[in-house]
Picture 1 (cartoon, rainbow, N blue to C red):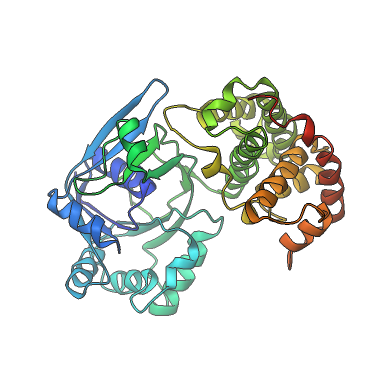
Picture 2 (tube, rainbow, N blue to C red; picture 1 turned 45 degrees about the vertical axis):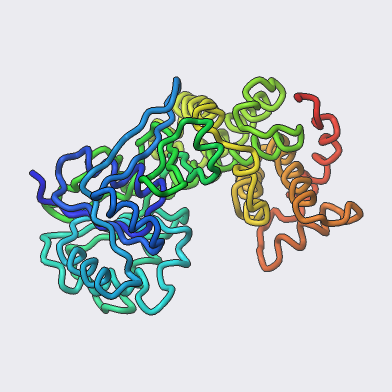
Amino acid sequence: MNEHVLVGFGFGPIQGGLFVSEASKSGCFNRMVIAEIDPKIVEAIRANRGAYQVNVAGSSGISTECIHGVEIYNPAAEADRQELLKALTQATEIVTSLPSVSFYDIGEHSVASLIAQGLKNNTAKATILYTAENNNHAAEILEEKVKEYSGKLNKTVQFLNTVIGKMSQVVMDKKEIVDKNLNPIAPGIDRAFLVEEFNRILVTKCTIPEFRPGVQVFLEKEDLLPFEEAKLYGHNAIHALLAYLGSQKGYKKMSEIENDAEIMRIAEDAFIHESGKALIQKYEHLNEELFTPTGYRAYAEDLLRRMINPWLGDTVERAARDPQRKLGLNDRLFGTMALCLERGIQPKNLALAAAAGIAYYIRQTGLSDDLSCQEILSQLWKNQSSPYRADLIKYTETAFARLPSLTNTGT
């Protein structure tokens, strides 16, 4: 029965290629409403009568999915904002898919303030809010921001975290769109959504009595934190490892790395025997399939195939971007290394990736080669702390000596 109403904030490939796509396929929604501040996107989808296209990369090629029936409004425009607020009073599912949690409360008509107004007047029996930002506590952060505007929330409202392992991108290069034969989001827009064929998304378990979400393909978990760590210390860490080692050897596309036996061996070893071993030790008491040797190996092997899928068209530059964040003391590489050290595991392969990441950072920023590893990491880790800080530096310094043997050997 199509009694659900979806309202999404932000219209990128995860919103368009996952949440709205799955809502459309479910047949449970009588409205799918999007808030988007890019006027070109809004105008193009309206001109296309509420339809847009997503390119889906599978294991053997790219297919196109066309989604119909979307309403799209620009909250910066008064009339659109009023229509959006009306939709929020009916919403059973709200999805935020923004660049980061810092976008929750920006501007006079912020996302948090609009959601607060909508929930205050909401007539639905219950409403759940999916937070799709890459933050382990996005739901708690959004809930707090909304409460600042509305006060105490009704008990039939629940904010949910998500673990989204779906790789995606917006292709903006006109030549690339033509070369890959991609369909633009809508006529008149020189941008294309390209997402992988994957929808095994984990979400916080909905605990609202007698409420059944409209989208049923997501996997609910009582506690998402272990799975969020598996994504950060597994998926994200090894993706960065492939990118930085690939850059060190001069590769341009992630798919080129598939034929480099050395990098693939390092990636598999780091994934299974460093990241996996540490996470299994930490979470084996949960009796979850993922945190078993067999389950984690299957997870690693599946992701290693997907990360280098040629149809996804991922570039080394895109996967390696923002090294300052990715080399954070508690982020994907050094955070995983610290987890290993805590469990008595030597993170030699991850240290090699960290060293390659620093080399990439030096090339990108033009830093002097005279700076030591410790000096660079001290700059990157300002105001960040870890009991393993000294050991992390030592492992990375040792790994630097191994970098020259990798350079250009696979090209």
